[in-house]
Length: 468
Image (cartoon, rainbow, N blue to C red; front, side, top):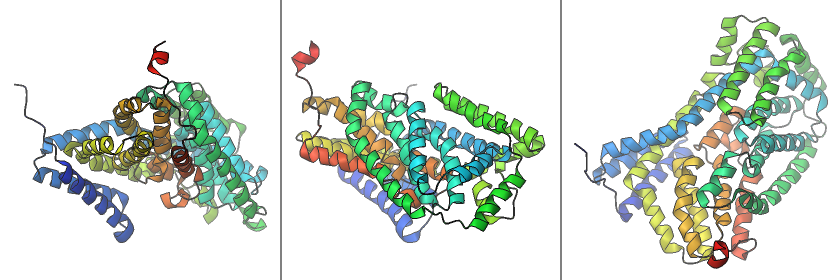
């Protein structure tokens, strides 16, 4: 017999209490107790669930939402696991150490950050993937920066600015296609109007990295340490030009728009083969590196920092954060907190400017709650599109809002899938790159300036003209 029992949603006051209580748990844990993000998210989710159930929300509804959230996030979990295996195989094969070795010999610390940013920009534009860029070029640049004496926080910022630049603007990027599709806008029109917030933010970021890079003009690694790093890498691994085959093949597959998981799988398999052939490691050792990463100590601390990483085990804490994010966001959805927020926007949005400001605020709130912009795009785009039609705004404004407050804002949220992936892959904590990635918050700054001034806020065509 079909279940027709009505799903219970809490009213406005109770929704606000649930939202504030959940937010208080996260802030208290992060700022006062200093407890892990995973624990904070799970406790916040439990608080929301308990309050919702007290006010009539059924556990089955909450559990269903948790399952749905987990389904949406499972691809990100798989990618994290594959990246861990990829990093482990490429380090154990000698590919990453060789890139680090020659990078130390060639690159100048003075221009390293600018070069890293531009190189990652080119790759992300051509491939349309920030995750693929960070997982390949980003890893190599992080290792090189350690040898050059450039702080990892600045290098992570340069890598992320470059990776996110292409993720926003490349027509090959899934977000560049998804945002206009869910907003009712043409892709090329979407890209055109994103340039107004993206290009100024990118140029200022490059200037920032150039100025900062000048501080490291002579490097901070002493000559003795520099020579020790090079000699240790050279004696630990057998370098061969063929070691570049795994990363080159993966890059080619990404350029050809092949799915990222199969591309990474090919790179992992080639890495294992190179480990066996060129490093003389047995099959068991090569496969162990996929699980535990490269663990052999060189007895040189700075070199171990560069190369002792990777493996599935290095990503398990990140996977836990994604699962915890689902545990947190699902009760808010099941209790009707997100629906309540939607209703509030309709009341506050009484004109073009207020609608635009509310759109950014609402989507950023969704990012904070749900932790993944694929889901938030799907919620905010269709929900806000009719309101943009009502107030005569072109839908390119909405699609730009989704990208500015999603693609570039999400890395600043520690529990968002982007933030989790970037911190895990680059091996730096969230706090290390939050202030050294100006691109992320400058896009929002320019967006708010344009809204306040009306500059480059595209108006919708008259209905007669649009229908013609």
